[in-house]
Structures are given as structure tokens and as C-alpha cells.
Image 1: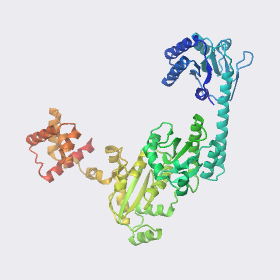
Image 2 (image 1 turned 30 degrees about the vertical axis):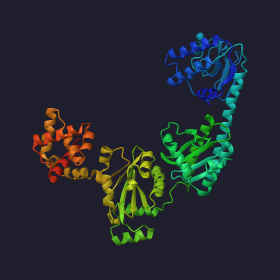
Image 3 (image 1 turned 135 degrees about the horizontal axis):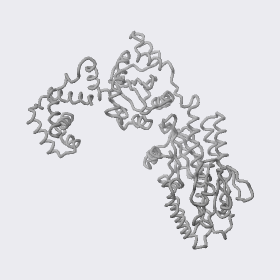
Image 4 (image 1 turned 120 degrees about the horizontal axis):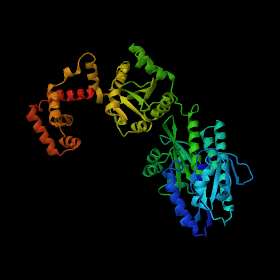
Length: 568
């Protein structure tokens, strides 16, 4: 372990020895102030200052605890021993000694010290001068007390570290047997003695081990038989906002007491190539969890991800022939309608009624997009069973077959949209069609508006071609003509007036045309009172003699305003 890791573990095992001397409280005050006024290149960030505050308060309550740390490197520490003036100093060893003894020597080597400050007024800075490359943990200490509590506590830390290393080795060995996820979870339970549940993103139980005397609290047996998380437990997790807290956690770990029970849970998410694929829940049952348990759970999540990537687990059971057929449709390599129909029947595709093309792109640069897309497509097959997919370059393409024209599964808060947001991906949905031979044309719809989607609505998980087809029309026009030649002249007149008089009539007109029957929403979007909105509209009609009762005229005006967005 490193010096900072040792310090973290040491702080969890305070040495419960009473401090008799009131002088130590004053010394703690001085050390506390020294930490706050020390030079930034020698001292810690705000977190370390907070640790110094805790040390200050700890000494006021007459407890001896681990103090501040000066760490210049993160080399591994393998053992510890008392500091001796006669023995040569070596790296990778933690030396325990009093500050007065340490100051009798000097060294420029990278040494690790647990320093007992028996005279802290100037000792901290003096120690760092004598050992400029050393790592220090300082503890305020009464020289009249025995050092045995320090040795005992340090021994417990090293024993815990060795025990954790042994547990990790056993987990890795279990994974290397290739006996599957359930075997890995069985071994994790035998090591940690805490019940474990692993479920995928559809709440299906992938593996679980461990029963509790109060089994009815979490329905473990019922869930084992059902194969899914029970509705009661799922509602509890949603009520406790477990998933929301995990997704916003920097450590990908949630630890807290489950509502309606006396048990604490530690939860973590499992990711494969940035895709959330599973959740692990561990019940604090046999012992109170420490940092080692949380590290154990974190490491277990990585092994679970590895198990889920092994052959025949998370790799989608998707015939390559389906992908080839879709690719041929998208590239229009199958022209004969009879051949298309024959292939459809041979592959068992549903007879098309309402067809859509959904192209899915990554929101960020992805070197491993192919692997990420394969994992994501496996999840999509559970959300939308009647679809087929293929990978085209840097994006995933799905053909979706529906029995109706409803698009609820593509709305912003649908499970598919939420899954895309969590995976840092987004989709573009084509218009509806019914002939498989037209797949290429509707696939190109999604590609033609991609640039507009990323500019006008970058945060929307799923956009529709119809949201941007006006810009597509403008793009087609601009390829052979000047776009401004198709703009309504009144719009440029209003824009010039606004520039000269610092008014907002064009913006007001755009809101009016966009929300023609909702003046309250238009006023809200403009951050003005509704009466002010009416005043502006009346003034606009008066200044520019515009007839807004004519629907064709309104269409021309709005179309020009949309074309102008492309110029920006």
C-alpha cells in the first residue's frame, strides 16, 4: 500500500489512549495553525486542511489519532519497523519513530516515516528539511506514553491490507476458472460473508448468493425463484433513489440504510465500454463495512464486467445474416422486390407495417465504438424485441418494425432515451415507411440532419427527422441556389430596424409564429409580460404592415426565419 492509503486506513483505527497532558492541546493548536499557514508547495489541498481541522478537534477531546501527512511520492510500502539510528534506511518500509530521534540523521532517499511528534513547535518543518524526499505521517505524542499502541494499530492496518490482497487474489482465481458469473458470486460470498445480488439493466437477476434469517425483508428466496427483482424491492430502490445517486457519484458507490429495514446496502454499477449493463447490491450483514469492503465491491464490479464480456454472455445472440440483410437494404444492393421479400421470410422478419430507421451515434469520441455498440444493441433487443441492427462505420443502425404508428418509446423520458443518455449516445429517427426496399432513403434522412441535431438540440437523446427537415430542404436549395433568394424580404426589413433601434421585433415575431395560439408561452419564452407581448405585436403590425391572418404569409415568414438560423 502507499503512504496515503496507509494514512486513510490508520484514520479508521484510532488509538484509544487518553492524553493526560494539557500541553498537548496547545501543541495541537500550534500544529493546526501550522498546517493552515504552511507553504502550498509543501502542504496539501483543501481536503488535507480539513484533516488538520479534524486532528485539531480530536486533540481537544483528548484522543490520540493519526495526524497530517506530507506525501511526495506514492511508492508501495511492504512492511514496517521501528526507526533505529544504527540501521540503514531503505525504501518500501514504514519507519516508526520519535521526531527527536529522526532529527539526529539526514537522508535524501525516498523514505516513509510514521513520526511521533514529541515537540511539535518547529519539528514539522525541521523533519522535512532533514528528509526532503521523504513521506511523513505526523502524530502528536506524549513521550511518557508507550509506543506499543502505535505498533498494534499499524499491525492491524497491515493485517487488513494483507487480508484484502488475499481476497482479491481469490476473486481473480475464481474468475480465471471460467465457471461463470454465479461461481464468481458464490466465491465472493464465501470471502466477504455478505449476501450479493447482481441484476442487469432490465432488473433480471444474473446471479445471487446468500440468505438472511429475516429473508422476508428483501424477498431473496422469492427473487431467486422469480429470476427478477420483486416489485416491492424495485419500488424501494426507486424511492431511495439508488440509481440516481449512483449515476451522479464520483466513486460509483452508494452506501446507505435501506428504507423499511435495519440493513445497510452497498450498491455499485457495472459498465462495459461506458454502457451501464448491471447493478451489484451487497447487504451489510456479517460485519460492518470498512473501506476494504468498498474496495472489494468495486473490484468485484470489474470482474463482473469481465465475466459479462466472455463468450455467450453479453455478446448478443444475433445472427450475422440479419445484419448482412439490413446492410444490403441500407446500401440498396437488393433491388428486386421479390428477392427482398424472399429474404425477409427466410430470416423470419415480421411483415412490415410501420417501419423506422434509428441511427445511434456516440456523443463523445469512442475508440472502441464497435464493442460499445454490440453491448448496447443487446440491451436494445430487450427494449424493442422486433428490431434488427447493423454497424455502419461510427454509428449503429436499427430497423424497427411496429404494429402501430405511436412513438411513445422514443419520447424524452422513455426507457430507451434514458438508456441513451446514460451511455452518452443519441439517436435520430426517420419518417415512417412500409417498403423494405426504401430503407436506404430513410436511413439517409437520419444522416442528412445529424449536423442540425447536434447544433440545435444536442441534449435531446432521440430526435426526429421531422424536427429538422426544413433545414434539410434549405440545404438542398443552397446546393444550386442562393438561399437568401428564397427569403421573405420583410424579415430582412424587420432585422435592419431592430439593429438600428435596438428593438426585438424579429424575435417577438418568431415566437408568435412558432406558438401561434399560445401567447402566454411566447411571452414566457421572451421573459416579458403577456401585455408587453401584445403591445410588441400590435406595434410590429403597425410599423411593417404585415398581415398575420394569412396562413400562407405566416408560413413564408417562419420559413425565412428558419433559413436564417442556418446562416448563423
